[in-house]
Image 1: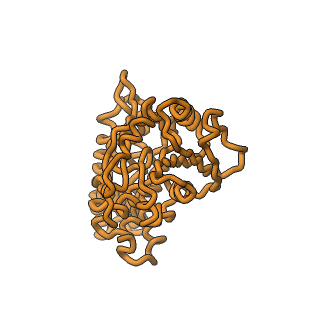
Image 2 (image 1 turned 120 degrees about the vertical axis):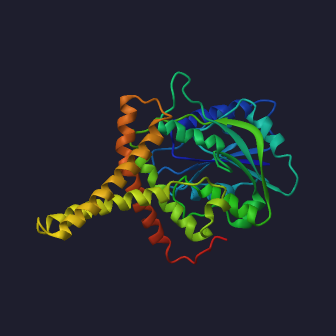
Image 3 (image 1 turned 180 degrees about the vertical axis):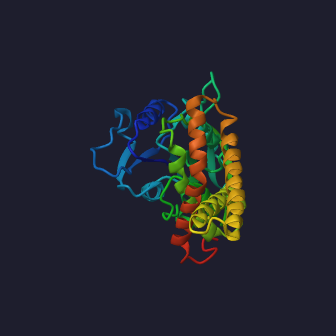
Length: 338
């Protein structure tokens, strides 16, 4: 049996996913045995999830109110009966031949514990993508992401599933993959495909995503200083964010210090010089960050204004969230996730 686990917040995109599955599970190419486990992770009880009639023979709804994606997926796979558990996000659309290709993907040697599907992110053809669209497109290059990721149930059981200390859909899948490989399983890429449309978001979405820095701090505590390399994650900008934030803090402190020193004093001039250098460093760092985000984008006035404003706010937000995550994880033993 194959178990499909879909944690959901009840987003409108869920209907497209379920319709795509219904079209395949009702046909001749459906597996002999398959189950669909929908994990309702909505915080509010707003009624039962609507399941297409063609899926009623396959689907079961589980409820885990507002627990987060890691906990929701754990509930799903622990209730699953299949040898393979396939995790799908509720905002992807499986290709018309997804079920057939899934069966081929799972015909792997016994040493393989997980098979990732191909994620495609459609981008506008008539203009350059925005910063948010480019960020979503990065999913196509992501390793072992649960937008479409199949694991043997025994592999999940061997490591205890997802770490529920990660409250967001951010890094929890890479962290699980690392532990699965560490106990001896291989992970490979398959050929089945899902489409991940870019969902509409506020122009300030890049600010809210900085909360993921708290999860990075937890990963640093669990897996040590080389956590990015061990989890196959690309390098980040945190050292630059720290430098820019520190420069801004020094510049503000210098302004405050000048306000309480005598106008003609030597210390006032020294503080002013230091503050000026710090302000210059902050401006240069912020401008470099904004340029890196504006250059590949559509460069419309709206996008440029958003990038300039958020590029000034992201570094301190990233640092604050990192410190918050470090503070919460400080009691854990270093390397506890190894």
